[in-house]
Length: 214
Length: 191
Image 1 (cartoon, helix red, strand yellow):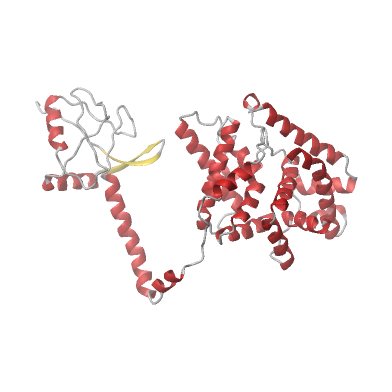
Image 2 (cartoon, chains in turn cyan, yellow):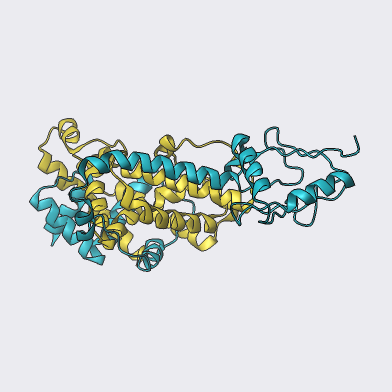
């Protein structure tokens, strides 16, 4: 019994993929009491190195594993269907895969930059939106009638003299003018930029209102 | 060969569907991960919640882990990112000083959380420390030296054998006997 405990102690420090160590590892993985013992051995080292948190939560590992049990088991073993699909693909697969990847990336970029959201008062880089007046609001309302590629693009008109609305800076776009849609989308594609935010890098496009009276 | 090789083997087993192997990894790194997260999150109960989330994320991402970096480095990155995302979602202040994830493993246990901790669990932490230190002091000198050289100095069995001028097998035995003696004192606290 102590021989098994000594082997456990040893593989924590000096594990080799030998038959003996693998057998000890099998024992460790397969026996919850051995895992608790390993946890205590680990705790000894953590204490000596002053790596204990201020508060210890007993049973933390059990809580984690209870959640893991709800997760599907991982498997990196290729499935038979995958092997069949790849058989004979050879050179064509080697050429097409990067090309397909670029095409997918380009499609994603187009969809992403059509998702336009402007926060009131937000100062992301140079992105600010000019104030509008009633005439400009009318123009914006016309823009709001434009169809878009994706349901994710949702813009609603702002109030005159203010850039805020109940939904912030959003314009609603409807899908009934393909030519205008095409122009808008081309504009977005040609003028997309990126700005930092607390949530990471976000795509943006500058949209500036204008005074229709001048 | 060392403790990193056991991580590689355990990761392989998890990737092949053996969830119990992941339990071994959790048991091994839970305190370090919580310690790292405490650099970002001041509430200790939240630290454990965030740590739990980090381990779940690590499990889900383990299928893509190819061993380009060491497992614990990869795990620490996930933990640090999880903690930062937690802060962002909670709209809390950023930590008072940055933690480079490459240095995370060298952090000591001081976290300045005492004003927030649960008294009972603080007592447990203190009790564990007292028990371990008392048990170490009670050990014969050769066992004390062996376990100290291994756990605190991080020497390999070969290096310890040179320092103590004894065979590697003797080093292995001494370290085990030291752990076993301390474990006998520690076990009642955790059962």
